[in-house]
Picture 1 (cartoon, rainbow, N blue to C red):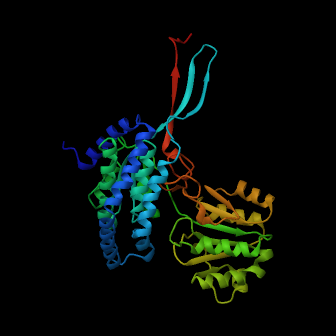
Picture 2: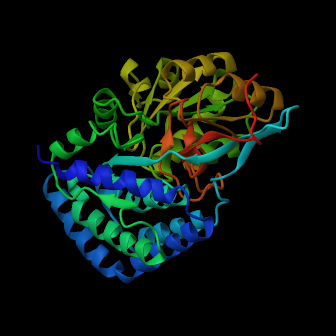
Length: 417
């Protein structure tokens, strides 16, 4: 039976992973630097090819949110390079002694961090995932197989080839970074069957993609489901701070997973604050949809349906609900939320602690914009996504989250009695 192209890639990645696991931190950091340098050489080619793919996507009727995620301009390109260089500065996630002891008989036992092995990344529309994912995987000693969407195929191939050249020049295995170059679903379907070679899959994209991957493979999957993010304005919140945080959480970048989708406001301060919030959101051309109580205070806004509380808009739409106290806010978030990012605005330490302890989310922010949840502001540098799972990783998935551990035991001829 002929070996398929995808299987060859998977086999090559498995071999590369075994070689990567023993590389030094210095070599991996050098590779990341060389990868960034190689990307700088092809910058204009990347911008030109990406511009053509953006035109094609527009002609195909893709949404503006998708177009924005697809686009690489000079600022985005420089940001991609900075993330590669920043992840090189991250402390080495490998070979850390997580626990250890010497037993009474002199047997030395330790628990040591090691790479996961081979990581498969399946993603849509975001070419920056190509560089982020490769950077995080190389830093953590993992081989990576990239499979981007057809809408950015040529951009992704150019980015991957430049990084492969840089990594090999630095002395990493030839197949430490690989990309599947064929469009269509067949390659993805075959990748899902490669449990013999791939240790973890990470899908990045819409809920339908993630559901398909998770349900179609026996390979463990780190999932990034909806970013249905909430902000609760408590009765004692500073009004100006609350308005500023709500607007930044929603408007700073509406198409991303940590953008605000539902604003909860305490009944005790709703009448005072909602008109100011509406003015601020009107200025930013945000469509508001409110519960019945909100509609009574803000004439002319759209009614919020049950579906709205379940919806990640990724669009200039915000649902608003008036709640009767912190307990109702927490209950709403835990019922409708996706476990991604939720925040509270309050001057009360007790309220903040109660919210933090009882809200079941990967990131809980107190008096801070939901847009801050992620690798950069958490000091992780580059990340590969934000997991809404609880196993194996939760929240931003950086180099440390792409490791596991092994037990290492040193004896001197020790026997079991």
